[in-house]
Image (spheres, one colour):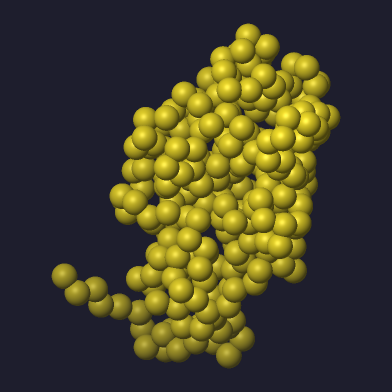
Length: 261
């Protein structure tokens, strides 16, 4: 049925003082400002990220229906009423780019890389732990798991997090290699109730990062783990200790610096 306006003609004319509609879309991807003139409302975020012009193919497109979590990214927005930054994970295969105006998107490329020329600060603690616990098999689902966990840690801040909460967090993430056990080991190591008994289950290495040992500070333990790796000849990863570490989400606060302005 066709909808027709019943507004009087004299009220349909815009007031001279009315703010004009914007025709450009402005948002941020991994700290970079993006402006698109006259955006196509049919374009989804996952397709935009993976397009040749953008080239952020770490975000995967699998089911295209928001059911597997492979396309997960972190979305941050500024709440003008509370003055707070709201962070959550979203399925980029369901999000039109036109619904991103004034927001900040973080993809797995924005967290870090083992390539020094790409990321001088190295990889994030979430990336590091999933690699150390052998949580990546074919690797196709890994970015989604990493972004889901990172978004949760940033949003949760310094609040207490349990292993059960973290396990429930991934009910919408699918690993088709059926490698959930090492993935959950890696993710649950961020929990405040992670113990040495839990750590004993990580058979391939002897130290994840136990908040029970470190008082919630992952820095010293992860640095010690790096030292052991270099001594045994294994490849050493440089870990960025801010952002999604238990110490707080300070690093991600700068993603919204342009949005607040």
